[in-house]
Image (cartoon, rainbow, N blue to C red; front, side):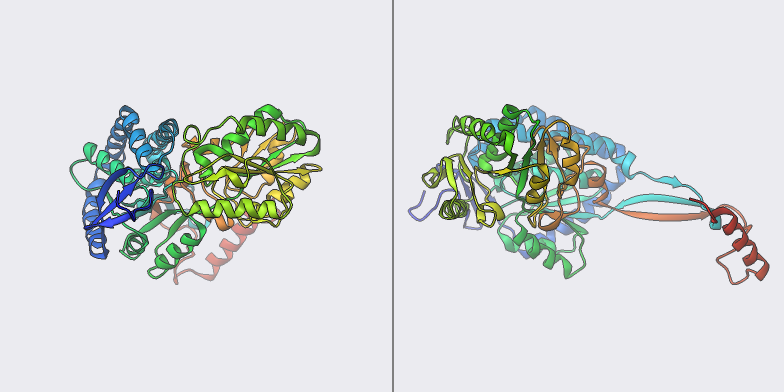
Length: 497
């Protein structure tokens, strides 16, 4: 390692993007850097590959995607080690991330035909002589811009959906995790060697911008809200549609009849897994007064057992440490109390678990995404107050509720794209559920039926089956025919609920 190199910070040397472990500085690998010309060439190759891939049909694509799924299963340990070496996250976390990715590949492959295949629709009165047909056609080439915090499961969601729908994919991994991204592309090429159906382009933000402007049919982006706006602006130049999964400030509500030990365990997992670097991670906890004290005690006891360098990995992006430190300092300066961790918890490249109470609602630790292993716990008088405070944020990605009698009712009222009841984060592992947010957390969905439909255009077709009994769409219609149409409509709809 050179004297100027910072562990975990990507660098370019001799046309190669160099990736290092944020904890040790050990080199994880090098990949070629793309420029605007290279991105354009990749898209051209992808267009040819897309035509071949589409021609395989749903069954052909399903067979190849399931082969990739089986390869991922067989090489879980290898991918987990690559991920650990590049991000520093615990190997066990990388294993579970791969398991979730396998679920999404399997579901998309098995359900694409059912969701997107041609179908006939019901005929309507005014056009009874026509049959309606609906089909979904792929965009051709889809760009996927992935994040560094979950470099396996997060990009595999849109990649698998786009591929199952019949598109070729250009994948731009985060510059912090290019080796993991290239591994995914290379293994897909092992099971689909005929054409470059899935390609990677590497580099910094300029490469992502070039991909947005390259003529791809759609872009799926995961990252910060600020970067999401830049991606949207670049795509808007050519009216390229986008799927945006941006930041979050997710809340957990613990109601009076909740299982407190279970809620505490889930809060610690939801807030501390992946060192808190989780877009759907729990950052705020709202506990009703009757269970507040017991919950704080349980959370502190459970979070206090976690060790940096073991269950808690390093902060992957070094500059994020400054944000975490600033949020903790602001919370303490405004009157909050650290019942675990605190200012001394920040020991780069690690941040120890930190639990804060009595934090003002206008502090950065409550208002802004921290993306570290911190939790705020706020006492509320009832679930109504908890819902109001949980929704008092521009974000709306995920959330959680613990309780019995009213838990589902509370979940329905949270302004979020996904909510887990009596668990945290579990919706990300279900391939049949849509994943995405509202507000500053983005729009559009990956995973599930809605996720498959994001990567194909609906196309409506009408087919005449015979002569028109009541001709309406022609200049040759007569006044008598119009009168008959009006009479038929009145008979059909007048007074009808």
